[in-house]
Length: 267
Ligand SMILES: [Zn+2]
Ligand SMILES: [Zn+2]
Image (cartoon, rainbow, N blue to C red):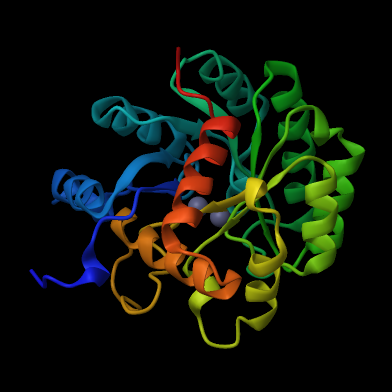
């Protein structure tokens, strides 16, 4: 291990990861230990990302590790959404470990599901979140205006939530903040040609800012091309701190406090 100030722990949280995925089956405990060593005090295991019933796997692993989880139908999987799946989500929402509905939203970059199916699943789950009284975790890519419009139309200000892995522009940030939402930055903020995202990261109010890895995806520099893991959220916090001209410790502390406000620990 390198003994440099760069590796000193920074108290922070990973507001969005998928360490329930098979990519972590061989060394999940070591991944969590590395995260703790790096200063990561909490993480949220976000469900539904790669399978019809991915939220069950997220919940199971979250239980084993003692972290909170979320459940929802990802826009990529919107074509698989059915009444049975919504009923299942509603049931899961009663589990004390489930702290949010998500990730839900619109992805017009990949279009893995037809757009009408994405819109319908998004609306339906925004309504479900209001019904069960949980915040939402929103995934949006190349769909800024429509995402903001659907959040506004469906009264998402009532539940609150977060725009995760923010890749949008100022207008999406402005409309999300107006609804009381948080904005979460991933390793993309440190990628080349991320000037607009960095500009948003610089201007989002400190009490609405979150950081995440979205592991195993999107490893930040200097880990690009590798499997991402929650310990690397410190590098995301470092980049956000740099663009804001702040100490990384202050960004970490704000993210921890915001995480606790948005996703209160199970009582
Ligand atoms: Zn996502
Ligand atoms: Zn994700």
